[in-house]
Image 1 (tube, rainbow, N blue to C red):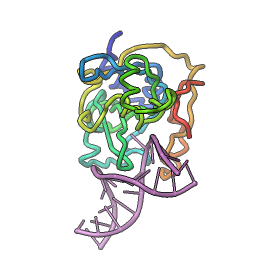
Image 2: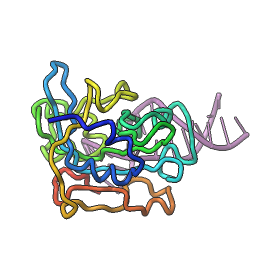
Image 3: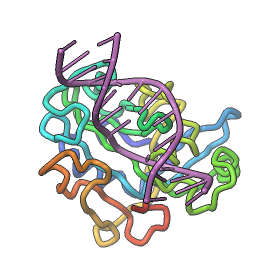
Length: 198
DNA sequence: CAAGTGATTAGC
DNA sequence: CTAATCACTTGC
C-alpha cells in the first residue's frame, strides 16, 4: 500500500480531513524494522485559532504548540496527565495551526508486539484510546516534529469507508471549551469495538 | 469511581 | 517563582 500524499494533509478543511482519516492505516516499524500497523477508527479535529479546545487557540504560540504551525503532515505529540502521550497529525499549510487527534485504532499487523507493550490487557483494550495507542506503537516525545511520510511513522491507504459507516459527535474531555465543546468534530467507525468508551 | 503523574502555562 | 490545569487510564 502507498503512503498518503502531502496533498492529503495540506488541505484547509480540517474537519473533512479528520473524516477522511477513518479507515487509513498507521504504520510504525518496531526496533527490528518489522511492521506494526493499525487502522484508524476514531479521530477528532482541532481548528487552531478559532477553537477554544485547541492548544493553538487564539494563535497561542509556545514551545509546545510551535509544531502546530508547521506544514501539514507533521507529527505533533504532547504529554498529558503526567503519564500519557497523544498522537496528532498537523494539517493545512504553514502558519495554519490545525491538527487531528488520533483517538483509537484497530491492530492489523504486529499484534504480538502490541500485546507485549500493553502488558496483560484484553484485546479490546489494546488500542481503544489515544494514550493506549501511543503505548501500543511505542510512541513518545521523540516522535514530535517527525513527518507522516517519514521512516519512523507513516499513514497508508487501506480501506475506503462510505459515509454510511461513519458517525460523528462531540469531542471528549474538552468541557472547558464552552460552545466549541458541542461541535461534532469527532468521527468514528460505526460499531467498531476499538472506538474509545466513555 | 478516584487517584495518579509531571509537563506546560498563566499569573504574579 | 508558584500553583492550577490537563485532548487519560487503570485498578480499586
